[in-house]
Length: 141
Image 1 (cartoon, one colour):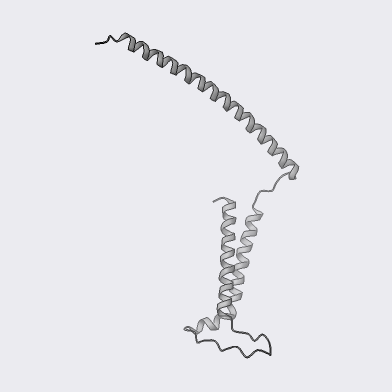
Image 2 (spheres, one colour):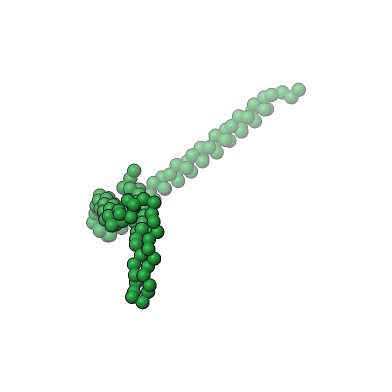
């Protein structure tokens, strides 16, 4: 897999971890009283597994560690990208060179195409001439 695909995959991983982190925090966070003017929040409903409720303080740490790890892996992929040599001017010069090379190759291909079409036309004329000669040699019944 090329480095760009790996970077895309890593961005998807980061987005997935962030999405799951926010969803878990929203789902599992205990209610908080916003102001003294509001009544106390309702108590949490009983959960099926007491481990989930007791593990809530550790979840943000675990999820943030996974997010940091994924971000560091992305940074490593970015660091592995080849550097642009010479800046923008060198890149523009290289683009111009490649464009000129492309034009030269295109012109050569066009000449070869025209030569091939000319040869095809000659072969077709010879074929028609040969078939006409064969038909003229055959005597009608």
